[in-house]
Length: 185
Image 1 (cartoon, helix red, strand yellow):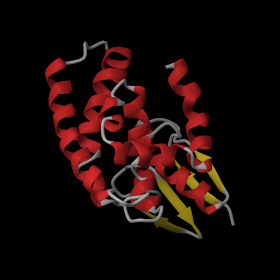
Image 2: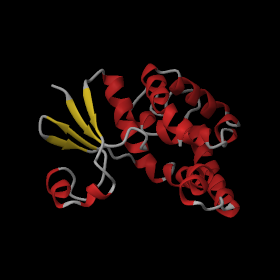
Image 3: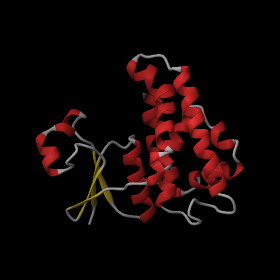
Image 4: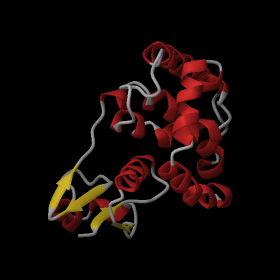
């Protein structure tokens, strides 16, 4: 059975699910919402996601959600960096805020220091490749694209971990698929 995935392929959370599905070799059909506004429509809320969020994954009629503890610490500062560097000017006509960038870099550096220790003697966060690694791929890819690769590259264990993740077939294919979005936006 083909899994139905509702979301935008360039969205970090949706890309996590796409990478996971590719890793597992599961067939899926991506269905972008008609618009961001449609996420608040009564039909969407009643039949797809009670909080009007995405991605939504339908597998034999069930909605599955991926939740990761790491996202509470890793994603917030990284999202601030990416917003400031990639989105503020381009989509909202705002200049990047150097203070927000500085603070986000400091927060992310602390998180990556912990990851550097966690990765000592291991190829992946849990030893073997797992969802713990996968969920961090989209945001990390965006962070690199936003010009902050030094945060990962200055930590040998983190740098090697990221290089291993980038060389996984599912990540290579998924990152290549969204490359045109970033080039055209």
